[in-house]
Image (cartoon, rainbow, N blue to C red; front, side):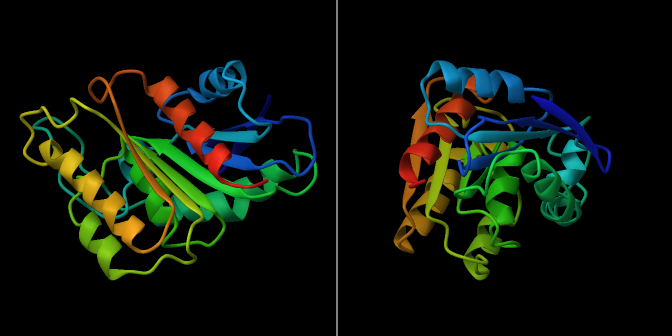
Length: 227
């Protein structure tokens, strides 16, 4: 594993040591990258490179536009996703891929919670990713379904993966309680466009098994895309 510091972001490159293998970019709330990569190795996933990005200003870097706090004492969301994506595409990707062997067979992007929303949002802003995984994604985010319906992705992805805990909708929060409906509707919308799309329900609430859920999402991406 190699640590890089790029534009105040911490970037961990987990190289598989084989040339021309896929690379998955994972935005993380903490430092889950090593745990996710280890879980995938133990699960016998195909050879791939993982680039985990941390040190994020979560409610800014992962938010596509401004939105009020969703809890009484929470922080507001401030539109930083476009700037964060520019750092990813212009700075992080070239630096990370200079450290892996050969040319990536393809790139995927994944994330948990708000980073799952960011992963799908990124497809509307750049054509650098062939697949995206929104794991327990914040697809309740105000205006996102409307955005998705009224904008075109930069290129049609080869695969989309969505997953959710089967108890995530059981919350008193008015916005978040629609998350399962919102996620299912988005998955159906993309599937209707002819995109290979998977939706998976996992047992538990939003805060359970984030590492194993993320690993499962990436494993599914690797299984569905040729390398």
